[in-house]
Amino acid sequence: MANPVLFFSVDGMRPDGLQKADTPFVDQLIANGSSTLKARTVMPSVTLPCHTSMHRGVDVPRHGITSNTFQPLARPVPSLFDVAKDQGLKTAIFFNWGELRDLMEPSSPDFSYLYNDPSTAASDEWIAKMAAQHIRDNDFDLIFVYLGYTDIAGHDHGWMSAPYIDAISHADRCIERVVNAFVDKPAQPNILILSDHGGHERSHGTEMDEDMTIPWILNGPNIKRGFEITESVRIFDTCTTLASLAGLTPAKQWDGRIVNEAFL
Image 1 (tube, helix red, strand yellow):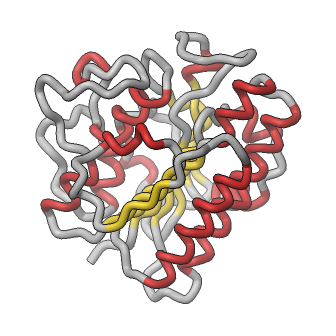
Image 2: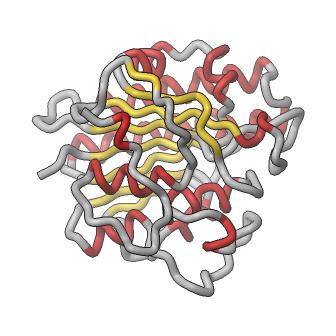
């Protein structure tokens, strides 16, 4: 059996914001893992289209989601969690923005926790608390944790403002809390931390580098240590790469590639 896979989406987290924030835990994951701060998201650089590409392994023209309002796909593409369900993995998702319910079929997660209010740092903290609790009590194979407050801080105060940077620092502590839930488990996870998009001023959605560039950070038993990924990474490579780490056969519809450069 493959090691568990745990991945975090920190909404709206720019790579330069991550570098500016106080993030000792994520910094350690970068130092001991494989990463790039030059990965690219998709257009429009908006939360639901970007997460759909992240989870379904295709670019926007293929899945057709162009706003934060979900429309059923004209030509369905299975998500990472749909494939995991079909292939017998035990899965869980923890999120604080309700629209992400449409990233997968309703029956695909074995456990789903939604606290539908990303407007405060306390909401991210609650998501981390619940994720840690359920990870300790269960043996999940694939876990997705979404932290939405960073994006709210960007919209309310501006990207790269002091409150926005503080929100990234807070996300670091939330990530640490979740990862530490694996301390007493025999199998340690392969971890991915990324964002759906960046932002500028108090908005995002454009082709500006500030909106399109995202961090993509891998760490775990099957990942190279202290390695900077030099190949180009797109957000829809996430789905295929995580499927490989989880020991899944990828869906034939996915266009993303496996970022093999980061693997041991």
